[in-house]
Image 1 (cartoon, rainbow, N blue to C red):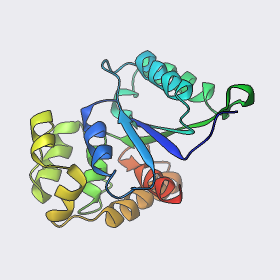
Image 2 (image 1 turned 120 degrees about the vertical axis):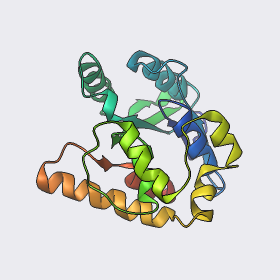
Image 3 (image 1 turned 30 degrees about the horizontal axis):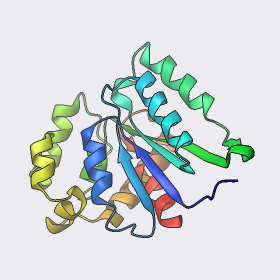
Length: 201
């Protein structure tokens, strides 16, 4: 049996998640976090990345999902099928493989979790633009690779500018509680739960 170490592969759907989780590697030093993302943001591409991660021996694969692109067909159905496929852990003892694949959703997109570093909102956003506008009231932010590189780590950039990861976790968890209580299907993030998971590892 292959040796299992606590390794987490964080799969985002694009560069935003890649750069953000890369910036968290400083906090979770005892954990191998490898952020990655498909070159083409399709469910099929995401599935290929998950399968690669399983084959490489990661025992936790965390998929960070932007729900604004899952509101419509065929993406919605494809996404539900993907979740169902990995509902149970992948267990192949002979190959030394044991892997749990989990999905963490944010509506509309990961930038909501960034806003949660600074303040809470349950406002319904028509599109990404209005969300980015609210984020920019708290901290300068551009959704570009150049900007992500310039910040020298998104997490520390937010904290240097008055945001707090702990605040983001509390706010994200609050959004999930309200989602369940009010059957809300917008403006929520499961990334607080993901951060807590990483801390537990």
